[in-house]
Image 1: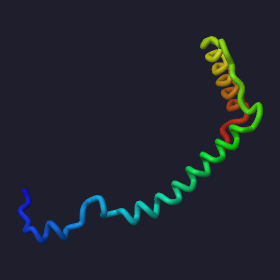
Image 2 (image 1 turned 60 degrees about the vertical axis):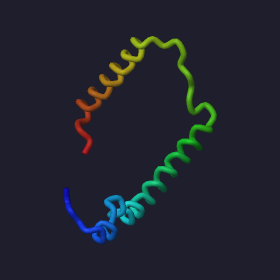
Image 3 (image 1 turned 90 degrees about the vertical axis):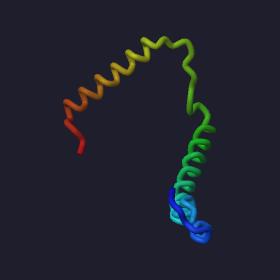
Length: 84
């Protein structure tokens, strides 16, 4: 255990206040971008017919769809090569 006089303990900054200003400055752009993203998603969800519900779809059909999609992607990659 570290033995410090009471004056040094009182005047020592807490570990949580060490980077508070830096974190606060960085958090503003993050907050702004996340708010923008949430507003765009909320706005686009209001568009009529933007989504539709698929009911009673067996998981096999979903697997078949993804296999077809992967095959098409593989063929396009083979035909045109890697995009750089």
